[in-house]
Amino acid sequence: MRWQSMLAIYILFWTLAVFLVLPFGVRTSQEAGAALVPGQAESAPHGFEPGKIVIRTTILATVLFALFYLNYVNGWVTVEMLDWLHRQD
Image (cartoon, rainbow, N blue to C red; front, side, top):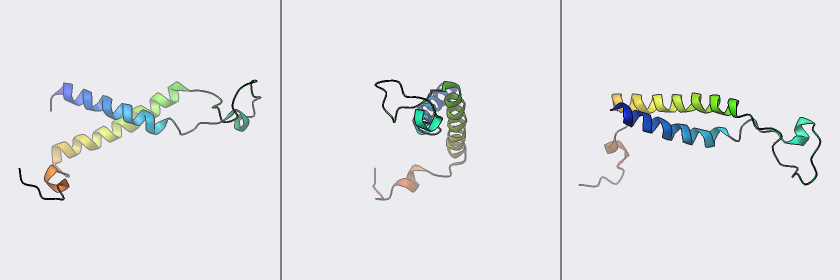
């Protein structure tokens, strides 16, 4: 596999991981003990910490990409294994 393909696939995994990581660790202003600003919804997040999100996302994307690459090299799951209808080309 060329390095450009590996980079593109890693970016796809990273983008997927962002959406998987975003909901975790979110606290509302009430949970944090902060006062609400007039007009603020009670369910609004208290603070946004992009550094933590980037670190968590990078770790998850790296693990997922490593599993993908190991499968690519070792052939643990192949297209033939996923063809449950046994179609002929």
